[in-house]
Length: 171
Image (cartoon, rainbow, N blue to C red; front, side, top):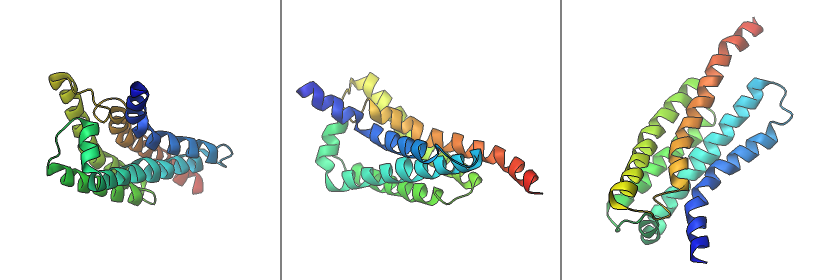
């Protein structure tokens, strides 16, 4: 039972990747154009992965700091309050990205990446340097920290590349 609990805690961050991916997949099965499908994917990713995932982390760090500290394998520190508000900033950027241009989405992905990829490096360091195998330090959080901004950037770059083709076709 203990290993099942560890697995569930470790895998939970993947919810913020799977729900938007499944939602976008279902919504775009009969999309009228590749551009429409891409826009739908970007909105689902921005709101679901970036926005809701970061908002969840904000609430978790503010409302259950002891639980989060245990999950990460750290002692509770005042920096957890700061992490909560850094995640709130990511949530705001994610929700903004839902109606942003491709260029803005690239910027939002890069901005979020600076925080999340830094967090990823910190998790990996704690894993190898200190043997921290806590469910909130390894597993799903590593995948989420890597993919949330990376997918945002990739989708936005793809949309940006399609913009001239769309504009040329309209002329």
